[in-house]
Amino acid sequence: MADTPRPRPNTTYSAPVMSVDLFAEGYEIWPCHDCMPWHAEVIQDDSGDVFVREWHAAECPTLAQVLAEVDAEIKRLENG
Ligand SMILES: [Zn+2]
Image (cartoon, rainbow, N blue to C red):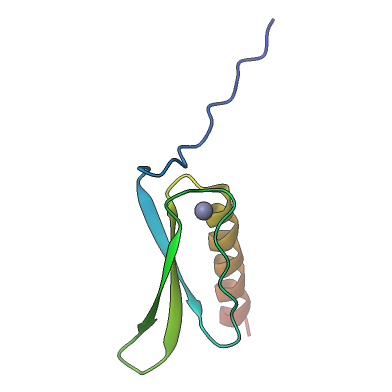
C-alpha cells in the first residue's frame, strides 16, 4: 500500500492568517521561515503593557509551535 502524501499546510502569501501576542520586553523580531504572510506589529493593551503581535498563515507550523509554548507558559503560571 502506497503512503498517502500528507497535505502541505497553506503558507502561501494569500493564506488565511492568525495572530499571537508576545510580551515585548527583550524580544527580537525575525521573519518567519515557514510562511509568507508573516508580519508583526507592536501593540499596547489597556494596562499599558507592550506586546509584539505576530501574524502567520493559520496553518503555519511555527505558529502552532509558538501557540503551544504560550499555552505551556500560561499553564505554568496558573500552577504557580
Ligand atoms: Zn509563520
